[in-house]
Image 1 (cartoon, rainbow, N blue to C red):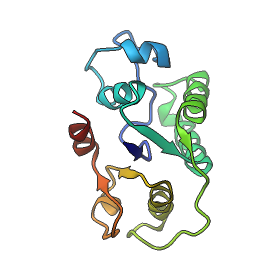
Image 2: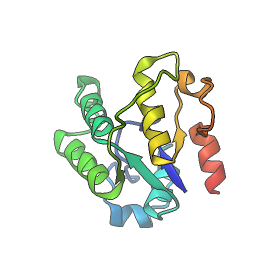
Image 3: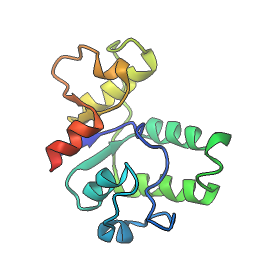
Image 4: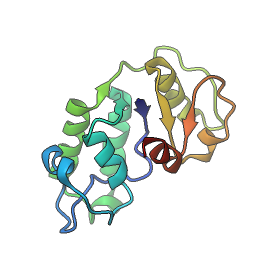
Length: 150
């Protein structure tokens, strides 16, 4: 299954019970349910779905993680590692050339355009995205997406 997510449910890299950032190899073996992001991260590590991103999305995630409020959760090195993991392990799709109005928030429209261009399911917790009439694009919240993978 091809999935696209704006990484909005949690903007921090997955961690083990001791708070260490999980590398892909450790992520495959990790079993704890302490963090809400772990089921999705484990499913991605097990290649149950492809995570689709774009240069613009990675740039947005980098900007969000650079905000001071995240300093207590992640170091700049961990952010760099996480972004490198997205660049190397996710499917990096070209940013869409045409972005049509699809949601109440125009900043969300590129996510819709990217998911459509990639032929992906859009996974989001954003009400503007979940409540939009997007036509043939499948939009799921994280719980529904994880239930589908079960």
